[in-house]
Image (cartoon, rainbow, N blue to C red; front, side, top):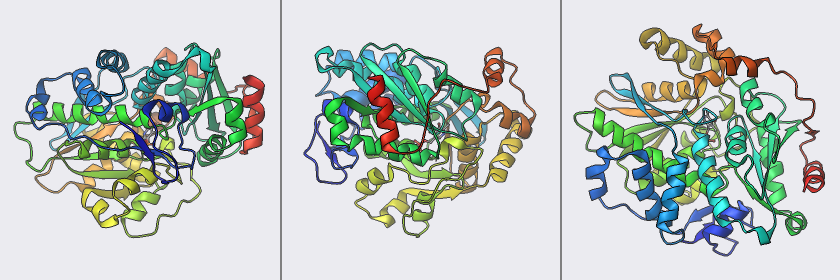
Length: 437
Ligand SMILES: *Cc1c(COP(=O)(O)O)cnc(C)c1O
């Protein structure tokens, strides 16, 4: 399997090159040359399979020629060390709970897989690998946990000065060792821009080996396909009959990485009727689907902070998958955008009705699915973070408190004096990188 750049001006690259560099030299994002289709027979048995079994089959279908299957099996089984249950919320709506991993968000899946793939390819002789990650909330913790104490790897987490919950921030500022948090005086988009600038800075690249742990890196996205198949498998198990034209899946979107993974799963043969694109008010892709031009805008803070992305980088991949054909996109995706008030109302409504607590991100996806489903249709939404990651918001909206000691201890932490703060500029980042390595 080889990979090409969405900008079309870089040579095709191997999985190793793609994983170890993140962004293509021409500034594009890497895409797999082929998207293999899984034989139909797989779907006859999928209802009886575990997440690891499913992940192993999908992974070998895509990467079987580049990583030895027995090693791939180990990587996949290590990645999915936690449950991903599908829970019924309404008669026609299920939640796929992706938040039972170590940092309580779906990003554990991509980060754990990526960390293992990077370890697989790293060679002591090539020097230390420096992993850069810009976080809007959950990537930082997941990536830091995934790489913490991994020999030969340093992780730099760039996060915006405002917007993260105390729990989210604590997850990567408290680790130490090979994890270096950097506070950026700006938004998530500023963090992401500076990281991208670092990748195309050839002088920096001569000095050090750097790669990205954002969904720029295709190895963050590939494992996210696996749980779409597993969600479908559980849906089959729970429903007596499955709509012949597939299920509807709602995805809470920020950088559009999770959605891109879902679209790839559909190309591999997963029976999806359509995807629902769930946004907060930062919604350039939803506006694009509604007919406007794709215009990145500065991000605005909302209660679903991990989705506060004004310039989603994976739009480049989606556009590439559809060859820029918006009508084709609209046949397979529908977008919805919600204000904080609307998201909170859904959290409250579902809690009052069913006693089910949703975090603001999952709640956005629930709301979009509720509004989008036609009578007779059924589907599931991705519940991307555990509600206890946002204890203040959840308590304010539903009255539910998380007395959990860990959460309490974390919430009490208010200052991190030793974290460097930088202006959102490449020279400022370079200074820290060169000093640390
Ligand atoms: C990152 C994140 C999202 C958005 O996912 P993308 O792949 O960036 O679109 C949604 N919910 C939560 C909880 C997140 O951490």
